[in-house]
Image (cartoon, rainbow, N blue to C red; front, side):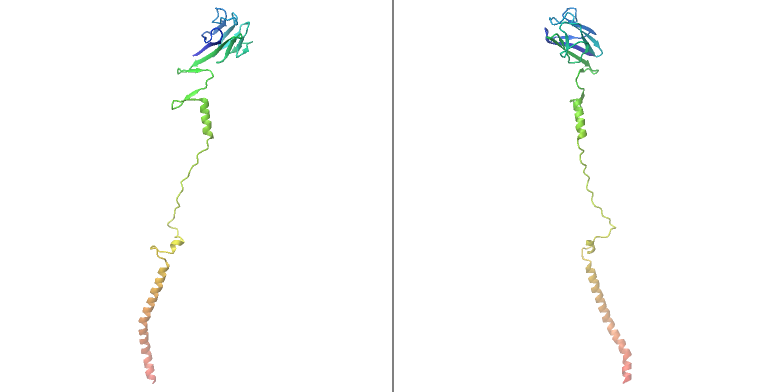
Length: 215
């Protein structure tokens, strides 16, 4: 439920508040007014306040010294906003205040930004939330580091040139060829030694009769 009040800033009763509880209220010097201003600047019936919707509309009632809103003299009715300053003549001013009670029981005063309760209990204004969202959208993305993969080797691939020059024991492959040549030479020598007497005997068997028969 909305509540409205006028608080005198300058005049005969500085600091006094007038609760606005009626749909139509008058103000002036006469005691029959809802808001009595006992000052020569105020006419007997100076101005009227009429509730319309969620605020009040003020109009001058033909006063001598005039009715003002934010230092502007009224010539037609004007809807008031929270924080407006009503002037009665040149020496009296009243501050117009309005507030509305939220369903949860909190109080919302006009012209105050909406707030949000963060998880930590801090109150964040709508402006702060907007700034945080803008900062998050403009922040550059963090670089993604990809893990380095280890090279894989296929066992079916032929060995490299460095591995061809050595056997499984780490010995040079040329050693096998050398041993093969040495073994072959030894075998030939043994075969020659075994065959020479046989060749000599065969030669002597065939040649001896020819030689003795000829002489």
